[in-house]
Every structure is written in structure tokens, then in C-alpha cells.
Length: 151
Length: 152
Image 1: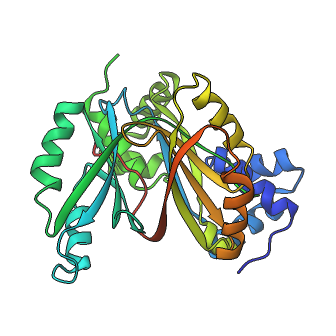
Image 2: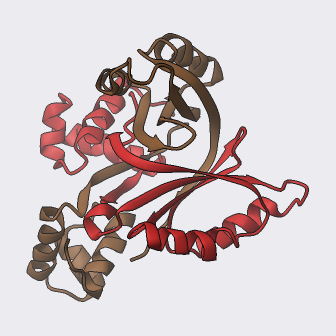
């Protein structure tokens, strides 16, 4: 595990808002030189703390009007290989994230679709045909916000 | 005003690798650098490309526990949503807040250093949030697919 000082935390907080900042621009905001900033970002990246970037896109403008979270239970535990299920579900383009969870469901999926009719098509043709699929619970996303977290 | 195939191609390549320089992005999307820049600028000014955010791996920082808390609110109070969300924002361990149409009203993503700390956050910060009617927890075991890319 990596230790952070206040400057590292400020870097993470800033990049979580805007990852496109150059080391120079980031350093100017935090009162650090460009090389010092670059070294710190490099260290956080090497340690895996900075685990990549995500684009922030206007989903609706790109034609994806609906995001649905599915709670999925597997029907025949022990008889279906989790690897087979995970491989098949991850290959569906409309499935954005797959999380293996413990609790009321086995998996949590984030699914995008053009509209509710398109979502129904994805659900029937792609999700309900997955190997070992059991009960499915759906909730339509209305809003979401990411918080800075305990930094 | 609409997004055409070239825009989609550009965004598809950028989604796959958001750190790409414009020159390389243009090459992969099969257009000139000038065209790629102009299209990216237009996507930004139209608010379609809103920016990029760093993904933080909390486990690497020692936050080993991640729990999805699915909350049903007491909707007899018209202020329930607003007051619940405002209070949840004050809890540093809450890293994501989502609202839903369905059986679940709000979902909180909560992280903790270990189960003991989770238990403490759950008791002192979560159960004390206003207007909770019902609460259920899903413990994250593994991320199988992530990145949230759109099938452009």
C-alpha cells in the first residue's frame, strides 16, 4: 500500500475532476514545478492508484436515453461456471459494467440502451439468454453523481 | 446538430484510450489531425464531450471494502429525496450517489478500510441518514468489466 501526503491527495482530487490536465497545468494549480508534478503522477500511476481515465459524455445526445441497473441471480449455482457467465455477459456491448457481488444478487450490471423498447430487446435477446441466468431485477437510472471520496 | 459517423469513430477511439494525443487519435479514426481537432472542439462546445476524469483505485489506497447500499426512502415526506441526498453528500466514505425509478430509490457506493470500519460507518453515518424506509447491502467481490464505455 502506498502512502499519500497532502499534495498527492490534492493531485488525485484534481485529476478526478479533470484528467486531461498536463503536468505543467496541474502543477501551476497546486504550486508545484512541472517535473515534481510529473514524478508524483508517475508514482501514483505506477502504484495503480490512478487506474486510467473515463470520458464524460452526454449519453442522451449520443442516442443513449436509458441506463438500467440489473441485479442478476444465477439459477443453477454450481452447475454453471461463473467464468462462462462472466465471459458471455462482458461480451455484450450494451453492458457497461459487471460487478460480482455478495448479497441478494450475484451480479450487478449497468446496461445502456437507446430507449425502453431497445432496453427490452437487449434484455430479452442478450441478457435472458445468458448461460445460468436466473432472476433479474431492474432499476432505471435517473441521476448519478461521483463524490471526491475520503481524500 | 447531430452526431455523424466520423464523430462516433473519433469518440470510440477516444473512449478506448482517453490519454491519446490528437495526432494518434486522428490516425486511428482515419482522418487528418486538423479534422480531428476541429471535430473534438465542436463536440466540446456542444457539450457532448464534457471532459475526462481519472479513475481512482481505492483498494490500492487501502480501502479494501466496497458496498452498494440500496435504499428505499419514506416517500410520504416530499423532501425525502433532497434531504437524504444532501446528508449522504456529507459522508466522505460515500463515493457515488445514484437515484432510480424502480424498487430501489437511491443507491450509495460506500468504501471502508476494513469490515470493522465499515461497521462503524454503517452504524454512525449511514443508519442515521434521514427518511430511510428500507436498506439492503451488496458487498462487491470483484469488478469483471469496467470503464463504462458506450457502444458507439
